[in-house]
Image (cartoon, rainbow, N blue to C red; front, side, top):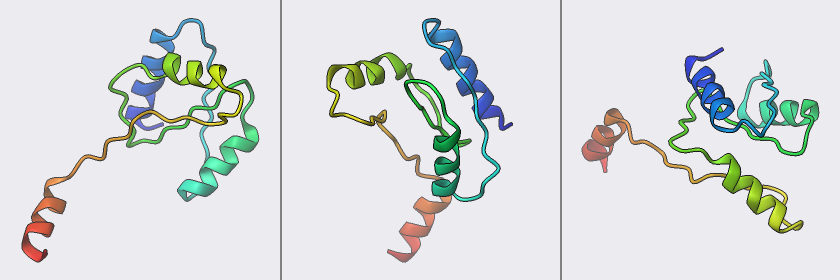
Length: 97
C-alpha cells in the first residue's frame, strides 16, 4: 500500500469517529477500470475514492456527506481538487510555449 494512502486512511479514520471505513484496493490497471472495480465491490452508504497522489488538506467527509443527505437528487460529490504544477512542467512550458 502506498504511504500516502496509509496517511489518508489514518487521517480520515482519526478525524471521523462516527464513520466506519472499509479500505478496498484494486489491482485493476487504469483509473476508470480501477474505479469501476471498486464500485462493484463497495458496500455502505458512501464511497470515497482517492489515489496514491491524493492529498487531504482538510477533513472533507462531514461536508460531503451533508451535501448528499440534503438533496436526494445528488448522487455524487467531490472535494475541491487542486493540481500541483511540477517544476519540470513549468520549465517545459516556458521553453516551448
